[in-house]
Image (cartoon, rainbow, N blue to C red):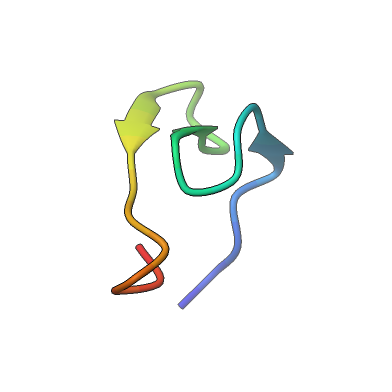
Length: 30
C-alpha cells in the first residue's frame, strides 16, 4: 500500500501521484 505523495488534509483530501483527488478515511487508513 503506497503512501500518496501530496497530502492536502489528513483523513480528508489526498492527492496521489497521478494528480487525482481522493477522499480517504483515517479509520480504514485509506
